[in-house]
Image (cartoon, rainbow, N blue to C red; front, side):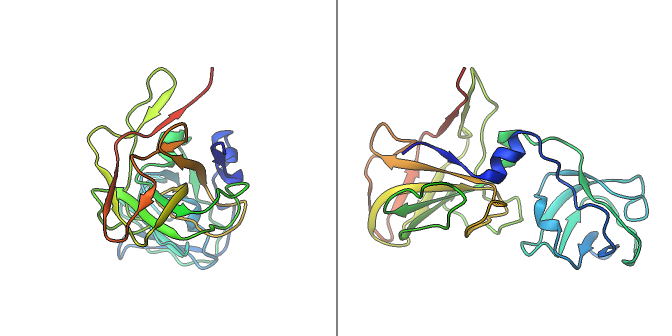
Length: 232
């Protein structure tokens, strides 16, 4: 099957606004430099994002996201936050437009058995055989550590970062059939709000080619090449 982009990914590429809207559920805390949302709306952001906020939350009105709680209850920034209670209507908005490379910075790739789902909005199927990270290290969603990255694009092609080792220790034994590439926020399950893409796996002619599709529990698989090509 072909590479499949989720609805949320297509919307992001096409320039969808990333903003919480004006809410009375947003507050901020100088302890840990947090911007909080009791409505769990912070999960639309990811580490590295530049955000615009009211000066009541951050002096100057801008911040750089460091971590995001996966349930969306808060994010932390590198700037100093004010202590501000919820009640007034506050908006948190993405300042920078994310390119594909930025969307999947510090991402996570997982390999499954069975057939690739019809689209990337569909729940994962098959057995999860592998999680691919940088040097097989553990990744905490919402934290920009040990995830996968891409080099700057060249000639319309985005390639895995040359300085990174993409690998993983098999979680189960099986035949690799398809993969799903998640953002650092690792949004699983079904839904049109999940930013990710899928592709097929084979030894040749697929979106992800492995030296062998036979995965053995406990063994390490390394991905040497991975590219995304934008057609002319």
